[in-house]
Image (cartoon, rainbow, N blue to C red):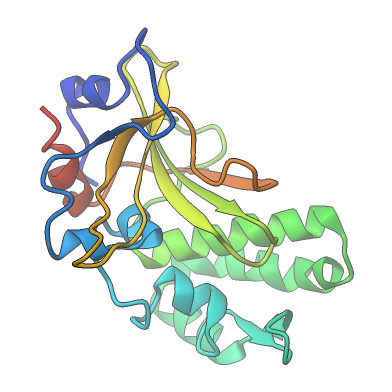
Length: 222
């Protein structure tokens, strides 16, 4: 997968400097069509995507075509067999994490927090893989991370990307929210924390590189 240069990493996560919560705006990121990219669109693909597209975070987590079967309150009651029949066939790398969901969902629905954590990590991993990201093992490189903040074990509230400087210590977050022509929302880099910091659940996946669109956008920081 594409990588940032060492110099670019150090611009995005400057060691020994301040890292304000809001960070700084990435030049050109407030322009069409990118300003309308949601947090998940940026973090998963680096581009604007319609929420109804296949394998977006809203589709996977929230729609009837996604991973879950829901009750009338939109609380999961089971797994969507049709969704996983397709992903297991065309994206075999996701199958082990589908099995994690199968193994843990009954206990998760009964309130077991360990099972809920397992489901949360597994579904985020599936989502990353379906969007073309390579997820590393727990002991993998920490240079690039995909981060999700959520208020429930089966949902999400905010997504972002972590970038580590070459000092091997300093990490900042690159994140955005969706906008509109009247209120364009830019991408912000060198953020000192993930937004929605008050939410109890944070899920972090180590990833091997970024999408080309993400590298292209972050290369506007000079």
